[in-house]
Length: 126
Image (cartoon, rainbow, N blue to C red; front, side, top):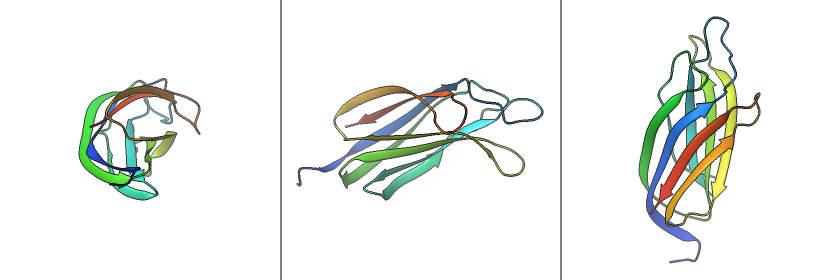
């Protein structure tokens, strides 16, 4: 096995977001997170949370678990969107890159590219 090659079970847990901006004219934003997990620019898996209606402080508490194999770092691209009848409105972005290691990591990270807000997530690799 190469030094930077890894294999294991990866869990990405989306807990909540706080202080998201409101992009709706009537009511509040209806946020969800769309994500892609990749290694060396190769997508490993993607998904999205469910939508929380009329809420700028959504709580998802949802986990995505996959067996992964790759080499180098893992990068998680997360975009927060406001679900609308037409096209969704962009609420923020987060890119997190790390070297996989056994254990659990809890993160609370500010969103970028759109007026602030914070998202709390955790990932586990073993």
